[in-house]
Length: 366
Image (cartoon, rainbow, N blue to C red; front, side, top):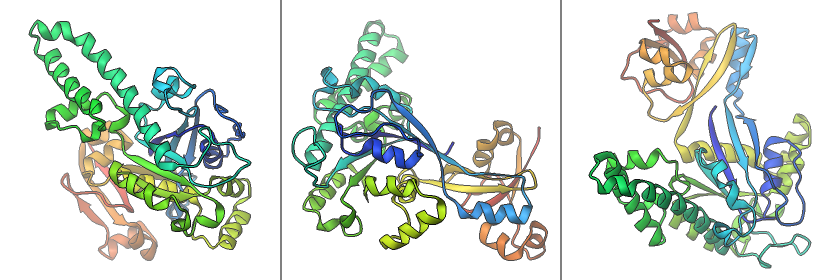
């Protein structure tokens, strides 16, 4: 698994249309609120042209890309934390995701109902973020109530947990997100264990009209949306969910031609995946051989043993060294043997920081 994203937004802003395009799953998507009842989960392969080239060199029997998981839940509405609408009851389904994709509507279309009656992306984002925060607050208060009696008895671990939750309670009450809480490194570790919704990176997907995607500043809401995103330390990706769904329904060659006709360098969905990698600070390294050529996702800055551990924990525990060559050098030399002869195949130890595009072979003790 590469990484996972929870897709949130108000009803009828294009969440399910985007999910359809991402996963080609054909889930129901219609022009009325609360179309999505049950959470939808889809696994998407991460496009990586390097895999096919490496597979050709190694004559691999299998080619295995890394993946992204997308979880689409029912649209949230103001008051969801108090039982309004359907979305709040599904927020727990995105607790284990790595990031939040917040879909907001910028396009004008009288034929597509807006649940509040007008297009205002900043207002919509404020509603969603508040509901995420209130869901976190619900969790925090439950933990505090559970730990309070033990904390009063002086038990150290519950007292530490209670103190951290009190800080988070105060943070959210002040209208801030958990990412903005002032915590010590030790307290942050405790917080990370609970996977709070407002402690996740946010990527705002701005659902625009087709004509606006290549020039989003032409939309009257674009400037205020970006100011709000900056406030939330969130990325912004302009996209047209409807066009992306149309592209996803074409075969590969027709899709490429359609994208070219639109004047785009890449589909919005591929840009979404790339933006997710950047948001989470992820890179890909590769392994190749006769059995398979495969992509592996790791955190940027990971050491060689940590990268090996993504394949199997035993490889990390028994790590000896990493043989590696850059993808570019391997393609240019044409084989692992020639890469060794040219001196571009390197032997790296435990302190080596793995780079994107490294083609790796790990040596380890069983």
